[in-house]
Image 1: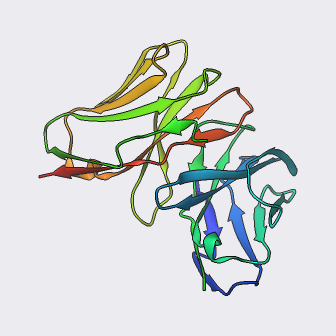
Image 2: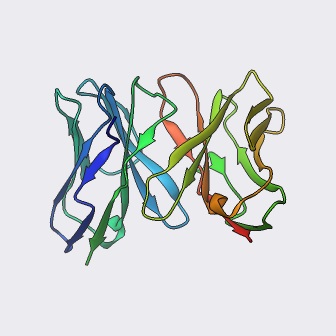
Length: 113
Length: 112
């Protein structure tokens, strides 16, 4: 069974630009969660999608948004990038909503210059 | 307000000895706890979990202990191996459909 895939793996953007990250969950998994990882902060929860509906949301500004498609693939968009958005963005999938044992992808490393 | 805390950013242990990673939480509503391990350039991988109705769960070399009254859990690795060197994240969840809250992680180095 293929694992969680994330594209692209690396991105370099400049302030003010916008970016879209993609995540393909494990086949059969309907829940996709997004996390931001920065040094010393651990994994900060962004949002979770289940069956194309946002189920949970973290404490991030509205510049961070996401969506999920009917095939469970998910995208995350960040608009008006700021230097502080530089981070590793991780996607995780699970079979059920809020499924605690999540399977993570390798992440997308975003650098904002 | 960090609800899941891992107060030791790093830990070094000799190969063959016990590694003890600690985690504290503030929200008494958490009912399920997990540990994840993360190697560089990879996503975290699930290691072991424990429900709030238990105080211990064991899986091979890994044992998690939960002390609900102290809002504290710990992960014991015995014996420690160099391949255990990674960042370990403690995580917790309130209900079956709630989001998982992660701690900041502890970097474990197992010295051969």
